[in-house]
Length: 369
Image 1 (cartoon, one colour):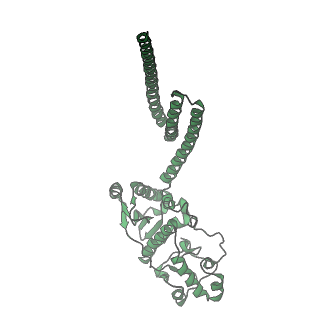
Image 2 (cartoon, one colour; image 1 turned 45 degrees about the vertical axis):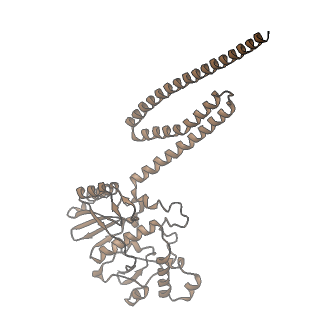
Image 3 (tube, rainbow, N blue to C red; image 1 turned 90 degrees about the horizontal axis):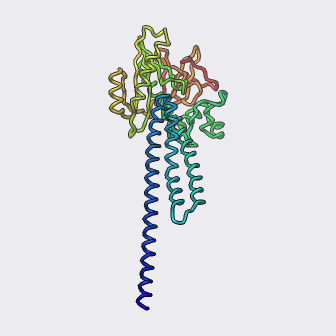
């Protein structure tokens, strides 16, 4: 009796183990089949996506980018879908948690899609307006000065850099010089430094007898990549200036832009028929090998130079019978041309300018560039 009872117990236990193993094998097979089906569906989906991508880019570049943005966004959602499926297929399914994971996944996809679209928009802006790169480091800096125009053309900009007490106490020449010194000493944004580099190059050209138009400073984003237009005799230099950190590399797109805008200029200016127009790329950092090759093949002159921080900044301008000097923060500064043949010069101090017979006016006038 005892032996039979033990035998029955053992048989029952064995049957239970066998049943459990069969169920586990069946569950494993079911999961494997589901995984194969999912992989097959994923393969077909990816094949369809590649076909759609090719079709979208064949339609247009914009359509291709829109498709790619959506594809990247869906990639952010895929891991969440996988987690949700795992929650549903586990021994004790968690359907509510799976729904929540999918909801969060949809939100992440929407955010990723908008982010990628904005990224493509910004890339497009940079492709068409390479000058925007100089704003990159300052765009989120609250202290940076991105707009270099004057809101109040009647105000004396000297008052921006010295206190009211200093303004009232000092003689005009003294406060002008103090304002200049404080302007030079204060931190400057990348945009302002870039503008200073353009002015420095203009100073070098003017002291060498060239007539200089500070086209970039006066036209802003509409300068078409022409920072300076310099003329001497029958030669014109279209100059693009890049004041970049030494560790950065300038790429061929800048060379292509300068070459293109230089070729276009005489086509829109009949008066340049007998002028030899030459592109000049002036930079403080190195060019990539491809950019160097492009410049050589296209006839773009590349000048590598640093900016002197101590060159004379005050422009002494002769306008009719008036002799007026302009500080670098004055409204008309970038519209003033310096012609040594007319007795116009650059000087370092307000005292030096006034000693030469120049004065500074509240409302500034100058010969247009």
